[in-house]
Image 1 (cartoon, rainbow, N blue to C red):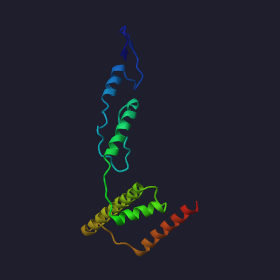
Image 2 (cartoon, rainbow, N blue to C red):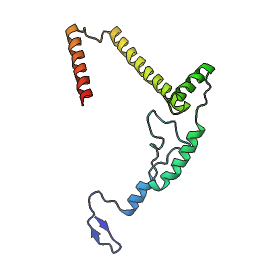
Image 3 (cartoon, one colour):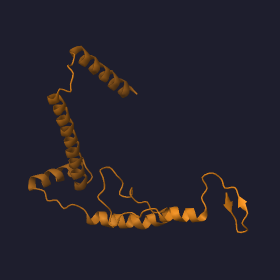
Image 4 (spheres, rainbow, N blue to C red):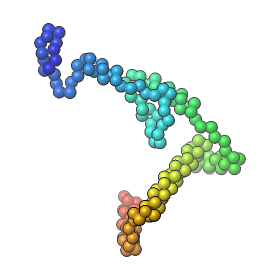
Length: 154
C-alpha cells in the first residue's frame, strides 16, 4: 500500500517501487572504475560499466583512451620481426598485432595445459588415480572417432 497526496492508501503492484526507492536504487549503482581496472581474459572492456546507458557512451570513450595508453610496448629480435613480417606478407595474418595476439593466445593455452598436467601428476603422486584398462581406452577412442566422423558428415 502507498499513500497519495491526500493520504488515501492505494494498492501497489508487486515489485513496483515508489519514486524515492527508484531514485535510491539508481544512486546506489557503483560507478565504473576510473581509470579502468585490468581486464580479465576474454572480458569486454565495457563489461564492468554499471552506469545507466546515457553515460555509457562517455565511459566507452574513456575506456578506449585508457586502453590505448595501457598498450604494452614490445621489442622483437630481428629474427622475430622477420618472422612476423613474413606471416603478414603471406596473408596468414592481417597485421603484426594479430601475429602477436595469436602467439600470446598460444602461450596462454600452453600454460593452461601445463597446469592441467601438473594437477594430473600431483594426483598420481598422491595416489588419486585408478588403473586403466586397455579395452576401455580403445572403446573411448572409438567413441571419440565416431563422434568426430559424425560431426564432420553434417
